[in-house]
Amino acid sequence: MIIRRFSGLPTWDWRSPFDELERMRMELDRRAGDYPGSVFKLPTAGVFPLVNVTEDQDNYYVRAELPGVKTDELGISVTGDTLTLSGERKLPAESEKASYHRREREAGSFSRVISLPTRLDVAKVKALAEDGVLTVVLPKAESAKPRQIAVKSS
Amino acid sequence: MTETETKSLQAKEKKEVTTPAELTKPGLVFNPAVDILETERELTLLADLPGVKAKDLKIDLNNNVLTLTADETLPEASGEKDVFREYRTGRYYRQFTLSDTIDQSKIEAVLKDGVLRLALPKVEAATPRKITIKAGS
Image (cartoon, rainbow over all chains, first blue to last red; front, side):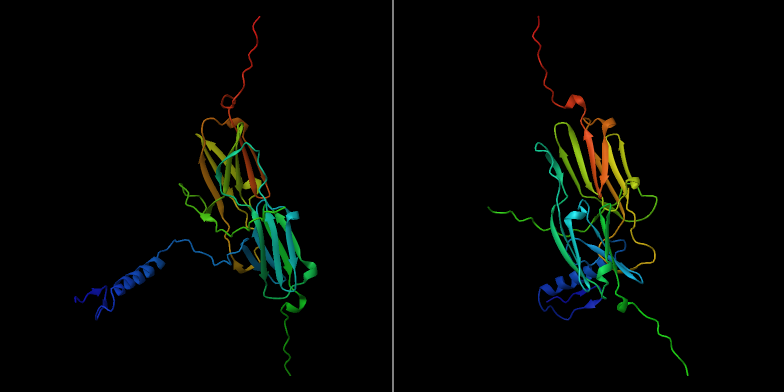
């Protein structure tokens, strides 16, 4: 059996014909990860709609891109620390005689539950939809906001 | 009576695209999802452009090439910290080649709720017209 060496990795013997392929695959994987400028894929829950959640001292802001969904077709409900977004996107029917050249937009129903790290003040939740972007402002419950504790020295 | 179930929407990542000429400000550029449909009298283009205001949308028609460029306004205020992000915001860009049968002076665009509806009426000569025959005296 011929003993081969691959880019500095010494081989003692061929355990199976697939070992070399496995090693080449690992090398290529490592090289592929080093390429700059590749699109950094954000981890998502894989559920429509995709949301961005941001926070400041007093509120959580949940934003979702929902073009063409009217506010009365959206269901937003909030419990202790979860937000549920549900609704349906309908594509308005075009005239009967239209023929489609391209069809990339989709219609359908969606429902998503988002859990937030702290309890929310359910009574003061606000939602607004502008230009196809839904923003839900969720104030944090008073008990969840950080409180500064003064230290007394004797 | 059977009821058809509406299918549920799948989450889709926005498609990033490189434009042929570099844009003056660096940033991400996406291809918006577009429906194109044709009737006898006009061509209609519907594009999903969430987060775009009418003043940030530019529609150019040059040599039968239709270019849609839109800047997405970042809705977050500066004091907010990210908890998690699942989608990115950036610019939208898409180009289409139109045929000569579009009457370019009568194009109409309406942007509502993040959906752009572009009506491209066809030139009169291209719409089929019935010619009535008058009986000669």
